[in-house]
Length: 309
Image (cartoon, rainbow, N blue to C red):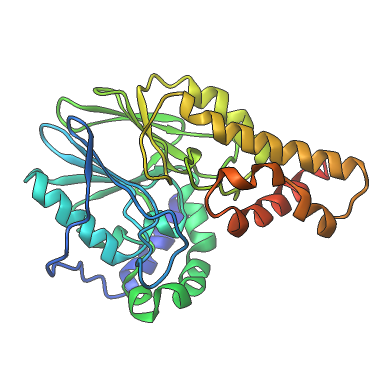
């Protein structure tokens, strides 16, 4: 693992790492509890117009320092997040916590200066090493060459094996690294124990259809343990609202259960993949935004996983 981190840091160092300091328009943020703030991203696909601003981003302010939960889908979004922080506090940003490796959560990392400690799941460096160059290439058309040119693939140097605690000064954050693979193979959650606010990353979707990039059976196995976290409310990775905990998991659990049940039924009936995908989880179609964009890939992933049970 140390070798992977070293390789990625060398990659970052090999590119001109000029931390952007020009003025940025502050992102809109909302207070969800004293010291806890969220920027709600659009429920949308990444485009040049939205600059990859499609994920929810967290700001947690302690007595001595600030932690950021995810940085957005471009460096421009990351700069806007940093500008929003400067409007609410003069305390330094000590930690940037990435909840997983997807571009809409990590492409803004380069907006944060070299004194910040990047934190993530112990599998995150490996996932960034495997997928980083592909993400830069595949998002070039959506974001534009200039925006992609600013992005740096920055691995975490503080790794969470199972659970760890960060202290911002009078504010303890419980970081949990989840297994097995669920949304991804490197899902991390952040619980502000002071206020009972859970930043769920993409283990929690509201409004926006869940996106499966790990394992449907793994995700369903994680949910009962996730629900036991002593949170009061949750900030989802996607969806423009905060919800009571653990009731916020109900819709997601229903969707994932339906996805798996339909796939198993069609597999048992001998229906081939191409004919099965358009039929899987169709009962959920009216319940989620971006259903037609993501359900076919979710159905394909679930079928491919479950046919070998």
